[in-house]
Length: 190
Image (cartoon, rainbow, N blue to C red; front, side):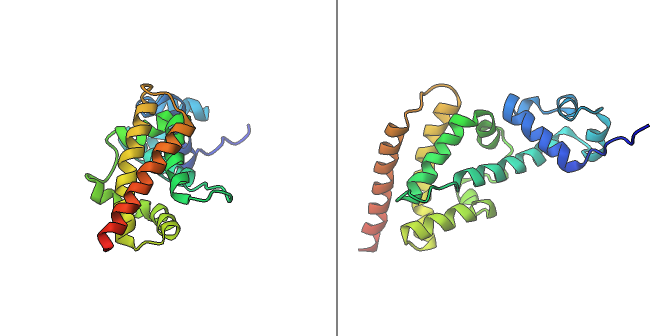
């Protein structure tokens, strides 16, 4: 008899991530994850005492995936800030279940925009933005908040099937918000 394949914790997290990605986070349970792995529910429950723990692990993986997605900036792109903003909106278009999992499920650790902007997970995004805008850290955070409110609202409308995505129009609107945020920061210096 051949040895049985060992189901690792990482395999279970990956399967839960795929369930969230294709069916929604609310569909993550021992049965759906074990079905994805073609195994019994025993390995899932062995590695995770509760489904809530498994969802938190899948949420963390989703956050990492989202950060990587945001930072996929083309070499020819003149404005990294606009590209990150458009990537955020594209994420809602291409990964609506993951978008809702990240931003509308209640799993976020942060309770406010200030906590979010100061979180470790946002550091890579803010670093790229700061370098692109040639602003200090505090100014970058202020611009980020303005852009985040705009792109999150735009992306939420799309992810919840209430708004059709027009990339050219979104880019034009995002450009206006970006220019306004930068102008406001520069006016503060005077």
